[in-house]
Length: 156
Image (cartoon, rainbow, N blue to C red; front, side, top):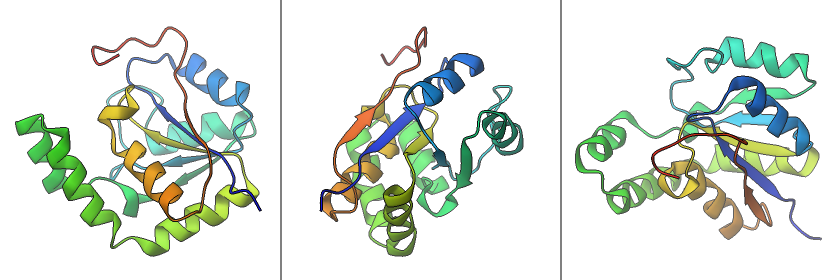
């Protein structure tokens, strides 16, 4: 049996309506929030508001806090800008999150899942590390990193 596909998407610089349209356009049925804290300074992207907006479009929402980047790693990354350092630390964190990874893999067999985080560039975001770990475990197959049309970011 072929493992299910997995999508990822960051909301940095994205208009909320275009963000939601991107999810709908890719037939996403469940958005899994991988932020440690599901809060945002950007209107519409905090847990409650985002969950309601998704529900209006028939898309489920799940916050998997265990897959968020621990605060100490976020701080180190912010200070150093060294993604390799973040990657090593986060991969060590992921090694302790078997239950959350198994849950995510199981959800991907029943839903069209998209992982959410802030960064527009998946190569600068921990969601790409989650996707890679899920692939390594054989829980998901192909990974597609989505981008919102008109999304602005310095990192893209």
